[in-house]
Length: 351
Image (cartoon, rainbow, N blue to C red; front, side, top):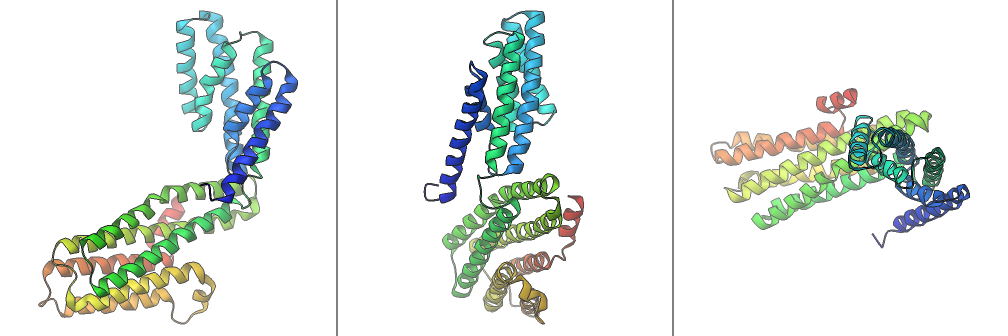
């Protein structure tokens, strides 16, 4: 974190945004500057789209909180029941309206802020005006939080995950060729699971990219859809890599990989690594190539299948099952990288 220049940029922008919100909100008098700075800090995000969404939620949530607090205290007075009822109603409304995680929490918070100094009209208007200033300031400064657009960040992240998956496949190929044990397979499995755990972050990036083109850069909508398809391809590939590693791990506990098919298994895994790397680093060259890396992968899996089938009498049944399982996973990777997987296309249409 401390070595990332982007982190320093983000905290500096957030600091400047909060200070600016305080400076503007302070012109309202009272505690307007503090309220504006708090709302600004809660609103500012890594992208303009996220801040806009959060800012709108803050503004709507604060108006709801003010109204609920005013009505509750007017009819019940300031006390145990009015405070409890205000928090309950505000929390429910924030969840129902889907204002965002922070904005939903902020609904009862602003209600308490308004109740604290009293409920005269000037106090309510004062707090709402400060909220509006803070949210707008956070939205404005979020434009400078990151030098890249949500689409660029999506490609950067999915390419990083894909290359890490390719590197893992290359290492697994070498391990299978030279002989691996349970400890090595366990290390591979931990790395594969770590990659899959990053997929929710990738989906969130895609959501930002689509929202960015839906409200801000409408002309880049096709590019966002392309990024979404690419992210699904990488997601499916990483999931299959985890399944392959789990199969190899289970094999290390049993009879292992069939010796007669060891070379072909390693070659197929190496072909998958190269196909994934080429898909990320040389996509244009793949389109015009007579023999694509994914076709090389399919040829390698066919060779592995033929070895397993032709020598089924010499290979233990468990080894055949695990070998064919790896073949199936590699074929899914090839389909995903070629965008021909039915599951891939169904997910894009449903999205």
